[in-house]
Length: 245
Image 1 (cartoon, rainbow, N blue to C red):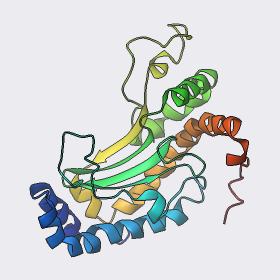
Image 2 (cartoon, rainbow, N blue to C red):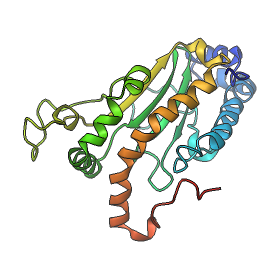
Image 3 (spheres, rainbow, N blue to C red):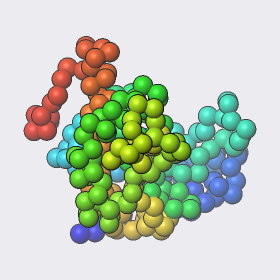
Image 4 (cartoon, rainbow, N blue to C red):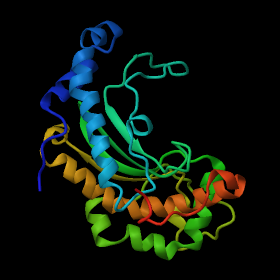
């Protein structure tokens, strides 16, 4: 069932304008439009998701502070010195892992399209090793998740940068060989920009997040376990899905 749109066409108008005029003077002149048409609607969307994620992904953070990305680019180490991002995004990370260390859900709207995706984007070497060990030992569970008809039809394939060969320590003919080669685990769908301002957008976000949540939990399992081994005080233990308020 479609709901009231989270964003109006004014959001895309602002982002398209920012893409054409990516400078501090233009942004300062249009800051009110950014706040009204982009930032505040994104905060409202995240606050709605805080409630709607709870039944199927209570371990994921949905809050303005923990989820929203700043519009300002970090240009210190980049040859691209444009000061602003031309898309608005929000991440929903595991509450017990650093923001970009675990598997997360993510959504984004921009002048060229929208995306609803999930996964582990750039795991550090120890985390990638833990993920591969977990995948190797539990490939039947992983395959049931990613090869289910609903996942393949609505989410697509798990992809990412990949090694040319199976990593050392695993046989070349391992059943999970193609997945063990991955250096990141990313999945989800892209949409036209106009979809972000349609009444169907929010409900689609919730449905897609619900479909991706079991795989997000699978990927986070070894990362949370590794954190617990490194620092037992940082993770008090598993919390049942029905125990959070």
